[in-house]
Amino acid sequence: MAPRIFCRDLCLESGEPAAGLGASPISYVLLHWPRGSWRVPRIRSHLMPETLGKAILAANASGIHVALVDGDEIGFTHEGFIRRSVTPQEAEELLRHLAVGGSLEGERDERMIVVCCTDGKQDPCCARYGFSTWRALRQAADPTRFRILQSTHLGGCRFAASLVVLPQRARYSRLEPTQVGDFLACLERASPYLPAYRGNPALAPPRQAAELAVLLWAARSGISGDVRLGDADEADLIAGRLKFAASVGGHFVRAIVERVEFFTHTRCETAGKDGGQARVTRWVATSILAGERGTE
Image (tube, rainbow, N blue to C red; front, side):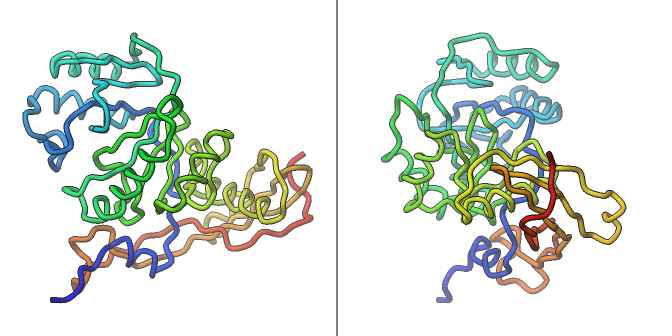
C-alpha cells in the first residue's frame, strides 16, 4: 500500500509560507461541544439544533469566528468572559446578541487561551499534526495561566498544526510538539513565537509579511523592540512589489515584499490527484535592506 500523502507535507515542499494571509477575525467565540460530536460543516454537528447552527452562521457573518472546542467543560467564551454552563438555546441567544454588537456578561477568566485545531473530520492533517501538538501543550502548560483547547477548523489545514492565541487573536502554524516549551515561554513574555508566527492579526497581507520579515531580521541580529512600519507606494501594487520603510530598536530597514504564485494542495482530499493543485498568490518578503532610513 502506498504511504498516505498529507497536504501539509506537500505545502512545505512547495515553499508556500504560512505567514502573511492577512487579518484575523475580529473576535472568537468558543462553544463547548464534545469532539466526538463534531461534523463538517460544524453547524451539522451531532445533536446541534438547526436554530443554533443558524446563529453560528449569523455570528460568522458579523466577523466573529465560532469554534467548537473541547478540553474543559466551560460552555461559552467570548473576549475573556465565560459562562460555565449553557444550553443550546442559551448559546443561540448569546450568539445572536453578539452578532448585532452585544457583549457577553459573565465571569472573567484572565488565563491566556491557546486553541489548537484537531478537526480530523475537516482534514487528516489537523488530526495527525494538530492532536500531537495539542497533547504536548496540555502536558506542558500551567493550567492556572493557560487554557488549552482543541477545536474545529481554524483555517489553513495545510499549515497544521494551526493555532489561535487569545485574547491577542494571534495565529500560529506548523507548531511542532518539540517547540511547545519555547512557544509557551514566549507567550509568558508577551512576545510572539517567531518560528510559527503568522503575523500581526490586525494587518493586511503585504504589511503583515513585511512586519514579520523585520521581526525575524531583528531577532537574527540580536535587536529587540517594536516594529514601526511606514506606508508603501500604492503605485507599486501594479508591479506586485512593495517597499516598506521600517524601524526597530533604533535601527532602520526597508522590507521588500512581492506577490508570488504557489501551486499547492489546500486539502488532503486532493493530494496525489492529477489536477488537484490550487494556484494561490501570496505576499512574500524577498529582502531586508538594513541601514536605510525608515519611519521616525
